[in-house]
Structure formats: structure tokens, C-alpha cells
Image (cartoon, rainbow, N blue to C red; front, side, top):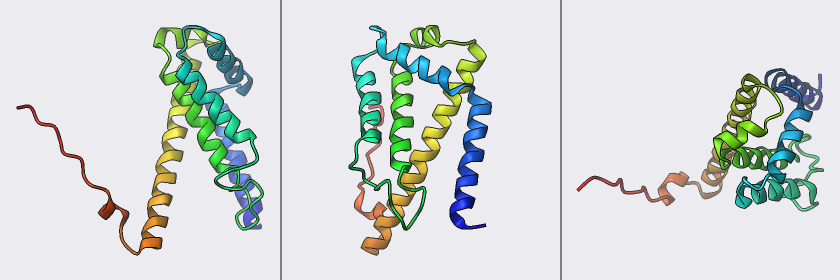
Length: 156
């Protein structure tokens, strides 16, 4: 089996698991539209989702969609930003409003929130690790050397 077919099969399996866990993707789309239309949802959260969606739609990307060296990698940056936009939209919305607008039962709402949050955390943690590793290789020095540690605030 070629590497491209193996990657495609793994992505399909992951998406299948997400759909099994989180439910109907059309339900999520209806939910996002409800959030975008509701005046109780903060404008800044709506703009984050719209911005991430726009980024996925436009031609210019950080990682070109038609990259030949690593098939399937071109859409990763789009997926990361869209998932993060969804997480921001829901997280910045009042909890009662977010639950009220969900077109399903409470259990399915909690499953979707868990899935989106988990996926967002996994993607961001991995990308941060890749970026840190790439910087280390380029500089020949661990990136941590360039980041000053924050001083902890202590109660005086």
C-alpha cells in the first residue's frame, strides 16, 4: 500500500470515528449557522469563525493545498484554523445560549463539544511541536533558549 493511500485510509477512519462520536455533521453546520445568526453571540467570536473559514476558502495558504511532496498535508492548516474557529465560537458564547441553540439533546451537545475541543487541542499541540522542532533544526539551538520564562506572580 502506498503512503498516500495509507494516509487517506487513516484520515477516513479518523473522520468516521469523529462522526460516530460527534454525530451528524449537518447538525453541526446547522448549529454554527444558528450561532452566527444569534445576536447574543459575541461579534468577535463570529469573526474568528468567519475568518478561519475565509482562510480555508482563499487560494493563498501557509501550506499550499497542492503540495506534491506530502500529499494530504496541504489542507492541514485549513482544518486547524476552521476547528479552532469553531472552538472559539462555542467557547466565547454564553453556556446557556450555546446549549439552547444546539439542535439535539444534551448528551450529543456534550459529545460534540468534547470532540471539537479534543481535536483542537491535539492539532494545536502537534503543530506547536512541529514548529518548535523545525526552529530547533534551523537554528541549531533549542527554541526555548529564545523564549524568556514568565515571572510567576506571588501574593505580596
